[in-house]
Length: 419
Image 1 (cartoon, rainbow, N blue to C red):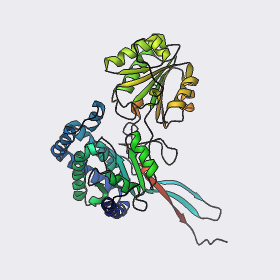
Image 2 (spheres, rainbow, N blue to C red):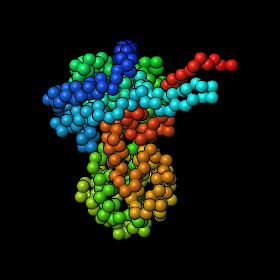
Image 3 (cartoon, rainbow, N blue to C red):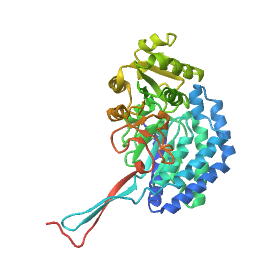
Image 4 (tube, helix red, strand yellow):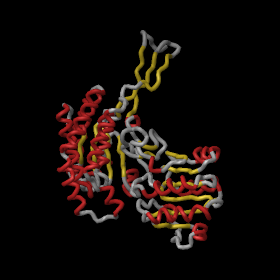
């Protein structure tokens, strides 16, 4: 991994400033951090014309798919949503200083486990400019400084958002270095961040498979990441047909470019002849295309045949893979073979089957009779999210305030010495 000297030097300066800022944040009370978030929210609103102009410049040079254009695009409503997101985070309970556990030993020592900030977070993300605002809010509230490196397609938007957030920090009396952005879209800066052991305490990548794999492969810093969002919705034989149609349409087509969008529809053989045609019709009316196995095409012959890789594909677009399965065990087997342990849903009126499904998946999030698109920190009541974690260490599912803390111990004695 080649590291550019200029990028390394800039990262070192930014990280040292972030370390100092994180120490200031760690000593602030919740009221100070909450007040800063509210000032920052107003700064975003005031800067909306500049942010939208910067976003227009990014869109003018963008040549990707419509789904990714939607991820990149900002409008007045989305800027307001970013601002409201900061205020929502300010209204949440303070994640710091919580006593996670306490106990007294036989020798009289009283031990407490206390929630504390992680330190300096490095956030590497793609496309969606609002990710920078969400990450900034969550990091500030949890006492962490953050260094953001957005995708090359959103460089202007990210800078404009950061200018507003830093202005809000300054007005609130907190160091602007609490929230910093990379100086450019050069990939060398990503390399410098990944090599930043001792400077950055945790790297969080949020983007496509290529980005996440690179970060996991090259990082010399702990990584909190998610794999692909290869999410499944399973329509069980005991599903309510109207509910199934509504949920599948939403899970796939509400926003096709997010990681919680359903990418594969599994449907029970017992109900597929009656229920698959109207589900297909609903999705087609919304502009969806299909990749289907032989059993599904026997019911709806004009579906495109799935190839060997389609059930392993995170489409992030208006395409869905379709397979007919024989019961919940077959659905679980399919998910185990092809899934990414992100989010899975079952639609059924049979509570015992639903519990079997929820207990049988290894994914971070399981839903019963609800859209996979609810895999979102805001929908969990976290105010926002910095990403979805699909690993098995530290955090799983939407990463909010509590997941951005670690802990330390306080031990209170009365003169004990160890024999």
